[in-house]
Length: 345
Image: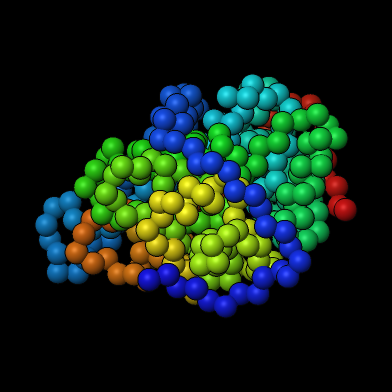
């Protein structure tokens, strides 16, 4: 049953158009395209059910916090940049997508400008700059950020690579699902953290024709997909705040929405208290996950582990300590001479 708290919508905000879904073949193509640029992350033992001792049973954790760049975002970013042959890139990001693009751009000799909302994590902004990326900071929320990114891409003749609302990005994120199902074909449920919806839509594509249940997990203050699916159309919510800084999106994307609508089995919400408890549990088990990366586990803990095998995606490990260490490691060896840019508008 979908848990849907009352969250105000923005009365005059427009809804996004609905596009045709992608197909599983797009995820297969993405896997081949990005293979040399991403890590096949491990599926690790997580939390066994009390009283259960059968080998192989329990909640598994897909360790995307060990991905290059600290999150799953590299997959979609790489698929889009490589497929488009982009050399000048603009993106709106809460941080991890920008880090992924800056890391990729540095290796490809491309130029990237990342637009972030004013509330973005300072250490994520610092790492983007250390990797050679330009940053533009704007007031407002995710909606305002994305409007500025689109305008900036047009002004500079750059390729816009959204953090989730793009066919190639969604297909790239779907490779997480491919890896899960290849290693755990008997998995009964996959819990997926849900913000803009790119990862959830990608996992839905990868799960096409497979009996696995796909469950999206949203922060309680921004249940944009739960509210939209209940309404039967994409809605834009008022800006919300959550410790899961990567999941503050205000509305479903045109690309992810129909895929999620047609395939997701459930959408649940979790509070900040539950997210922080899940992050603390991961740390005790040796997983350095940021709050956003613990959201899927929080959802699995809320539902209960039941009697079947489940997987929760640990989507990111860019804690403040990890970000600071990464910035210190790359800054001395950065070869780019492009000036860094911060604009406040």
